[in-house]
Length: 125
Image (cartoon, helix red, strand yellow):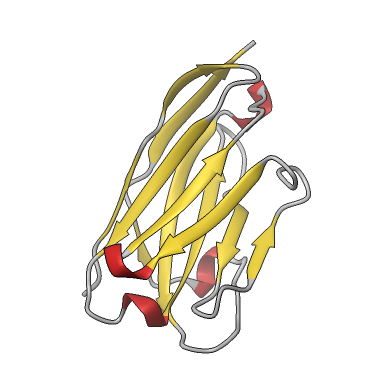
């Protein structure tokens, strides 16, 4: 069983920055594909960014140029640096993991096996 724990959410003004962290347990973290998702009230969960075990990356169009996903395999951690935040970025952000040692990145929630509890990000105007 893999445990996934997010941290770093909070309240920030529009134009500000936040950095989310996601720590995953397990000795094979380098073989996990990781994803960040978000869900706003009344909306479906959507992929924000994803990174494969070989560093291929995906970004949703709405965050390209503003968000950066990265990973530190030595720390079993994936990060989401969020800059130039907008009120529409307000949501609960979730980190997800699945085992995959290949080049794939995954953008569908159903593709992931392990989820964190979520962290709230609120961007005020």
